[in-house]
Image 1 (cartoon, rainbow, N blue to C red):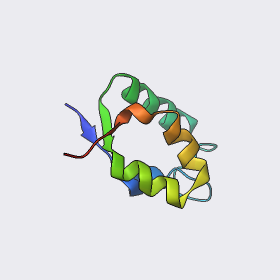
Image 2: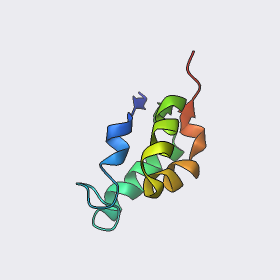
Image 3: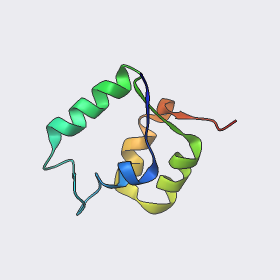
Image 4: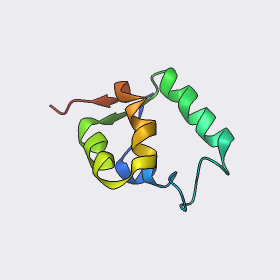
Length: 72
């Protein structure tokens, strides 16, 4: 089963938010593992929304561009 994530799901992990990477490293490691296993995907629209909103999470997303699939 694959999981599709949206912009809000990713932004919750940014600085001064609920699941900041600094305080939840295990969560982010598990999240990255699921991405590597191709179980988590998103859309290119989410990528562009993140690009406009937050530098911290955009750096993370830019390193994982393969999860952002083109919209059909």
